[in-house]
Image (cartoon, each protein chain N blue to C red):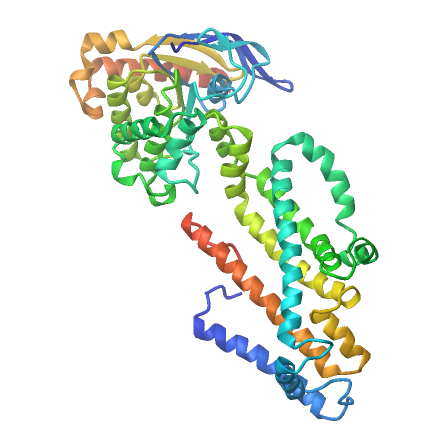
Length: 261
Length: 265
């Protein structure tokens, strides 16, 4: 289980058309990134799947059911982490499990696994303010993963991190998604990040927000065996990677051009 | 403005300077003979009277007993205001409907000065513990409620969204998200409530009570025993300040745990 479907979705704020005619299907265990300039409505797309916002036209559905409200089947990783400052790392991760009324032993098991997955074991009893930004985002990812959600929604999760930490986290995310594949909707404005992480990349345009094209990355990645390289900088040197990146850049730039006219 | 923080010795020095100036002026004025001694007793007269009152009863009790009986009412009044005001405030911050129902009536009631409740407090609860407690409650309740409400309303939206996506129910959201998030605001409200409650207490005791610092002052006033009135005033001021210092310490401890600094004073 874990499919997302945008069916002719539109979003109006007053007279402003934020999104128009969004159609996108994300299959089970597929990792899709949406890239686009700021203000194109990509975050709104994610927020509609999360249930924080509701489309003014069309439907957003997860596993065939229309989204009506937020819920733990659609875990969100926010750009600004959104950890609870008064809860320890363990308590932050535990909240969603307690909400599911799981027995204590099972909760402890799952927390231990999530901590291990994110290399957080030694920080379980720290409070968020005692951790670096990268560490805090690991906690937020662990908090989402531990729920075993059918889809994972990530809203520029590495946008608030410094460049080095971001690279480490991107590699981590690739590692985790190989070990433990999920349906992921990943929002970013960083083209390289999208190409590196995603199976498919959807390119969005602005005013109104539309999906301009969707590129298949996975087939190229597999054909060119990107996974043989564990370091992100090696992957980014591969010709097919560079080619895809340039293609997306051009596509985005054409948009900016037309916007200026 | 020089914003460099003061060292401890500087702070003690300046506080001592202020107090010294105050007591010097007071002693000078009352000793000068410009004002009759009866109208403005000197600091030493007051200190002397205070020492006497520690052991000799006045208006039926010694000073410590008056203070204790005031304090008991105060704790009940402020405690009740906190136990009722904070939960209602938090719930108003979470449930929109409750907010819409309660806010108009509350906005009207809170402008009625606590002392204005005296006739009804006396009528409903008498001069025992009930009447004064109700008046203190009337003073302390609004800041408890308002600050809990504001604290809950202005929780970072991201944290509310995080709680919702984790499937957190209403009760748990109020207890584990809104309450701790609103905590600094609640403590600020509590400090205001503690001050207003203490002030209303003495006001209440001036009218409805058979013991307490305020009662002692009224009895002293009737006997034109001005040093005793001043002892009462000083006791009120010092205890009020001590309560505020304690609350500030409590606030600082919780905030430090979250890696936050106290804002302002």
